[in-house]
Length: 430
Ligand code: IMP
Image 1: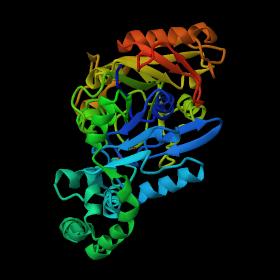
Image 2: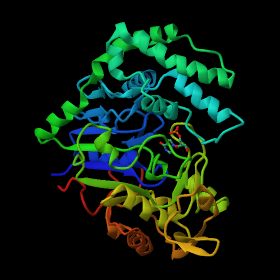
Image 3: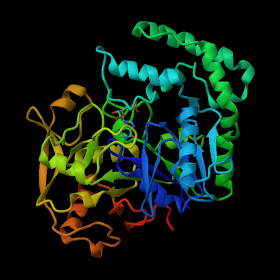
Image 4: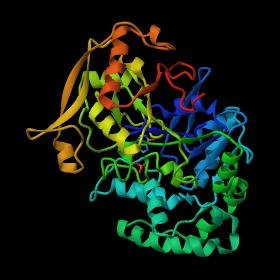
């Protein structure tokens, strides 16, 4: 039996939510290990749409334990709001089906404000963040001044910790010409919310160790994608966490053997939200058509996503970096009805041919994609649950992608609905 990590392989929004939800039927525990409420996971269950940001997707299934690991940055106010929102949809959340790592760092209002100030500034690099405070919260974690979930349980020492954090933030705020923050007021706000968060705060490493010993199946749910990884992505246009599968171990408190199988989620074309290089971007009617058919608008911010052809060179690189074993190919149905499709197989940089995206931002901006043209298909792939239901050209497209990315396609998703999946290999091996 293997534990499975699911990660995005492109710039996020690959359709991880549906696959994680589908796999969580086979899992006992679902663990988030990085990111925060910048993530947006859309689940469609019996035609009803449920949007999750911070909660692990598994919580919507009765009997599963959802875990928010130490690698996640947790906004306590956003967490409570999301719990209230999903409870209105009939999903019950309590300490028996959700735990938050004691050592997870908190996102506070000062973080979201700083994020927005930087994004709005006329100097510096505008990343196009979700303005949720993700970057500033990770900075404070690395700077060893973060407030952590466990600190909410110790009211006596909370004020001193908040003071230490706010001294730093007020210096930054003065630089931005923003009003200073009153540490005592923030402490009071946190004390108010603490009793509601406290029941969820537990030693996650211990719970996961016990789950593993008891033979429970653990599913690690990644957010964003490899190309947004702070080390391996298109830096500086990235998020502030590691999004690769190795983070599943670090961000949960299980060792490097935490994950037996890494499933990479790959969309049948490419999208990106926010700024940064995007070699196969289509600023034309084809890009618009993909965006409309794929409903490519951000779950969290509602922003229109940039759309482009499938980039096999970039996906192949990401799969290798992240150690992906097999791929779930999503949103194939969005490509229904095109006469021909293009797939990027490498790049041209000033006459030199590359089979990977070079690391420098200047080179990344200069690359010109080298395309291979593949015949499109006339019929519909929507809702297919077996190869036999797919048009022959769609099967060829999938097989060619498989060759180019050098990893097997373990499953194909053919609609947002939970069970519209063609399964080649069950990642849990059952
Ligand atoms: P941040 O994570 O809010 O700091 O944003 C950094 C970059 O990551 C921006 O380009 C965002 O658009 C992108 N990003 C963050 N979360 C997601 C996500 O869940 N899906 C897609 N892009 C994301």
